[in-house]
Image (cartoon, rainbow, N blue to C red; front, side):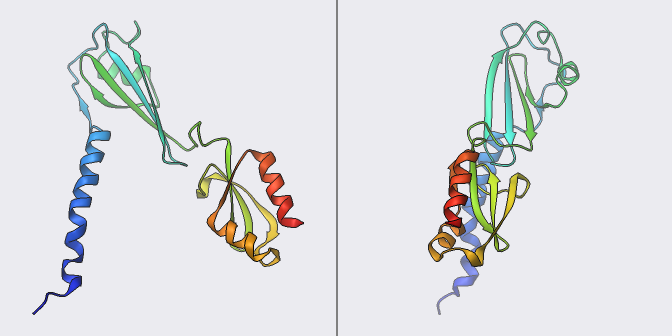
Length: 172
């Protein structure tokens, strides 16, 4: 007798879950901070900023300046408030911060969508609740079917001037 399909449904997701966990561990070293170590000359400081509104991140690596050379983990935390020390050894430091913002690449874009029966404009390339720019007076019921379909998918434009053109086109 054949096994019911639902019995094996959860098993298929296990390799994917393991892969995600492995990638998470690789991308975000968990508190690998050698507290007894001090930074040596020639060390590299890597700053990683995670942008919550778009899910992107930026990373920059720079040589440790004279202020940080010789510093231990507690001194680095003191000198760089707002940054979380994720990794440290004598030759490298990883500092991470998470900001409620868009990355520089997504910041110029706006996404126009239907939201609760009205046309809404969001900052960035995808709608995020905290990145809402405005909910317009334009109602879904007043739009052409083709415009409704486009807005349900989301229309991405570059800049506020393009948003105005798009909204004016919906009115005409």
